[in-house]
Every structure is written in structure tokens, then in C-alpha cells.
Amino acid sequence: MAASAVKTISNGTVTLEESTVADFDASLRGELIEPWHPAYDEARTIYNAMIDRHPALIARCRDVADVMAAVNFARTNDLLLAVRGGGHNGPGLALCDDGLVIDLSLMKGIRVNPARRNVRVEPGCRWGDVDHAAHAFGLAVPSGAISTTGVPGLTLGGGHGYLTRKYGLTIDNLLEADLVLADGRFVTAGPQKNEDLFWAIRGGGGNFGVVTSFLFRAHPVDTVYAGVTLWPFDKAGDVLRWYRDFSRQAPIDLYGFFAFLMVPPGPPFPRELHYKKMCGVVWCYTGPMDRVDRVFDPVRRRAPVFDVLGPMPFPQIQSQFDALYPPGHQWYWKGDFVNELSDEAIELHLQHGAALPTPQSTMHLYPIDGAVHEVAPDATAWSYRDAAWSMVIVGVDPDPANREKITTWARDYWEALHPYSAGGAYANFMMEEGAERVKATYRDNYERLVEVKTKYDPTNLFRVNQNIRPRA
Image (cartoon, rainbow, N blue to C red):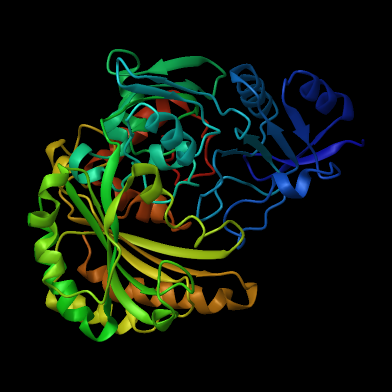
């Protein structure tokens, strides 16, 4: 090994002597991966293949002591630092070029306490791990809609999915978290401990430290009634107008997100629908099974041409689309919060939805009403407690040659619909869009987030994220 040139947080370069790097390596229970290491390319690969970054060092941490050592090493040497959890981060903010990456993927412990209905989760876990562990006890933690998503990123950004209308955002079910701060200290943040930090991490992203453990409230969710209903695209206007009204008045037990899609070429979809552009709703009902027919009667009266609704274990609907969206595809997405779906906005949706550029590209409208609206806008960093939907426009394709096509389509679609939005977006549905976009996402909570950032990370060590800058 030779001396390593590593980028600093001031955008310069520092040369780390071989002995310095060797001492850091020796301090870890995990392993330090450098560019010559045979595991380097695997370690720098994340979910979105559009991201191709080359860190100088990757500290694959095995425990909290490793995380503390890595944070201290980065701070002492003024290194550019990124933190990787599940690696799903769309804009690639789990990595940095020429800096140090703290990789949490080996920290995968889970402990379910069925008596207290809570789940302790380490940051290397993905939501499929949590679903599996909790389901054995008839429990579930509100999360997203793809089980390969990492726990840290989804949680710290807010977290919405199939259980949101009934049980709130993922952060609404976060009871406490352990963190390593920028100064290397280990702390717990909760309702009675470091309350300002606890407030900030519930929606404020990875700006404040490295979370090494989450404690979640779990809920009695076992078998759900779930699946997909599809309609021809020429019915999409009528269906979306119906969905606009039905979604907001539906029973709290019923969740359904709207989508434009090309039908995947495989089961459970019949061959005659493969690759057809359609619209659909993915449903998840958590209420009593003897009410299913009554609850879904308005859906079936809309005469979907495809209906695979039925009872299933909750982890099944959570992982239903994992195979459709495997790691290694090109991704570009843009998001917005939405209060109203005007007829003018729906016409624009139809125009751009009809131009889906590739079979996996899509647009989703996720409901974020119900229990989400019962929490005050200033109770957590997530400020859009009044929004009705979280919209995401996603360009996806396995072929790098289609990168420009999917990116242009997503941007054009978003620019057309943004004037009809609430202004900000779910942080986890943003690319690298700049400081003003981050401010718009946190609205009146932004200045308070700046104060917390200044207290806990005054040098902005944790800056490779949707960054909230400390006061100078």
C-alpha cells in the first residue's frame, strides 16, 4: 500500500500516510476497503446504477465502536464523509468520490419485543428483514412499498407506505434512536433524551449523525387483503378523477396508491396485457375480513379489467414489486407533495403518463392523509402534515443507453406538474436539487433544523445528503 490521497470537506486533498490508514484499519472489527481491494467494486455499488462513484476508503463497520472510530477518523483528518445504509438512495448520496464512506451493511441485528410491541433494528437492515422478524409475532412497522429499501434512509426521510393512513409515517412510530455524533460521542435521542435531536432526525435525514439503532413501535398487522386493480389507459382520466375523491374518503383501514405503468411481462398478469400502458391502484386493507366486500365494492364498481385482490401475509404485499425493481437499473426520480388534484393537473398527468418511456418507468401518487394529519406540522421535522399525496415520477431502465431518455421524461413531467404541487417534496424522492429545494421541503421547520444542525454538527461533517447547513 502507498499513501492515500483523500478529498477533504473543504474540497481539497489530504495525503494519508500508509501507517495512518493501517492504524485505522486495525481499529475496526469490520474491514477497510480501498480501491485495490477485491471487494471494492461490490462495496461501491448501490441500487441506482446511474451512480458511479469512487470513494478513497470504505469502512465496513461491524459495530458501534467501528462507527465511532470511522467518524473520529473522518473528523480528525478533515475527510469528506458519506454514510451508506441500504444503498437505495436515488441521487447516490450514500457515496462520495475520493472521500470516506461509512458502510453500515454488516450491522443487521433485529430484536422484536412482542410484549411491548416494539422492534430494535440496526442500520444495515432492509425492510424485508424487519417484516420477516416482526411477522412471526403478528406485527408490522409502517415503512414503504419495496422490501429491499434500507431502514435508515427511509426512516430518516420520514417513511410512508401501505400502513401510513392507519398508523402514520415511519417516524411517527420511532420511539428512540442511538447515534454517533460528529464529535464521536454516542447518544440516545428520544422523547426525554436529546429531545431536539429526536425532533430533527424524524424527517431531517442523515444531517445530524450516524444512527446505529432504531427502536420502532410495531402494530398488530398479520394477514391483509391486498393486490392490484388495472384499467385501460383510455379510462385513466375517469379513474384518476374517481380515485381523487374516493382515496380521501376511504375507510382508514384502506390504503391505495395510484400508478401509471406498463404491465410487466409475467405472472400474475395475463399475456394479453403484457407491456400495455395502463393505470392502476395497488391496495392494502388492514381491517376486518368480514368487511372486505363492502370496502371494495366501490372499487369493483369501477369495473377494473384486472383484479388480483385477496388475502395475503403482510410481507407479501411489501415485497410484491421487489423483482420488478432489482438493483442495478438506471434510476431518475422527481417528487412533490400534492394537496389537490385539479382537472387541469389530471390532464397533464394523462399527457405525460401516456409517454412512459420504458417498461419500468412509472408515476405514483401515495396517500399521506389519515393518521399523518393527526400530527402537528411542527411536532417533527416533516412539515407537510397537510398534504394529501406524495407524488413520485420515476424513470427506470436497465440499459445505460436510455439514461437521457428516462431523465428527460421525468424532468419534463415534473416541471409540468410542479405548479400544481404544494411546493416541497418527500426528501427521499429528491435528486441533488439544491438548497432552495431543501428549504421548500421543510418550510417553517427549516430554521429550527439549522439550529439543531449547528448544535450537533457545526462543521457540517455530515454533508453528503439533502443538506441542512449549520450557521457559519
